[in-house]
Image (cartoon, rainbow over all chains, first blue to last red; front, top):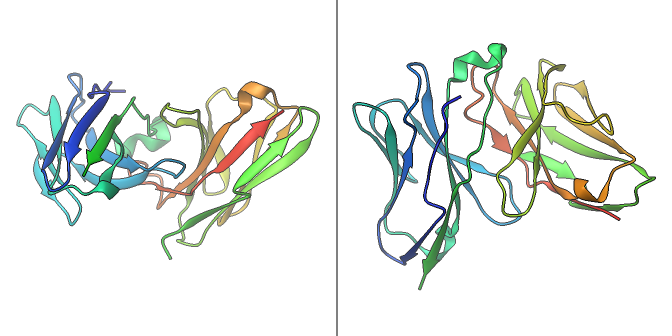
Length: 114
Length: 114
């Protein structure tokens, strides 16, 4: 399973764009990159998933360079309610029967200030 | 309905008690999961059920006993727990065996073992 490395914490202010980068140097060909958000005392929430280039949804954008050894989650114009832990995960969703599973790294604690 | 519900929200139990945690989803998902999360740590996978059969047990002590009575329900039976088992227990589900990266999590049960 590909190991991921993220900053432990980040600070931002309301209205700013926040970019959280995740390193995954040993990503495998079939691996996808997935990001989850977790608020205190709640379960994690799926935000976005991608394989290469750029993916955008109503919540965030995910940028993946050609070598796929890193990825960047971009949150546009954050608000106080975006204060949470953000987890980057790398894995092959199709390998479930061969032991594929969701392994959470340490996550990035994002603090948004007024 | 895109919700995973868990009961109870909080549970305090002694080391000689027997209790159960319940999880329910009505999204037609065929894979369900139990995770354990200690404070300031990422969720750790405990068990995976696929089509109501246990498919992954992450070497969890036998004092935790999972059960999947039907495709919508997942239980975790607890017996003779230790204080170090105090944690947030999260249930999750995904559409099927190839969707392990996109899981829907419940709010969790906060367990305290005294």
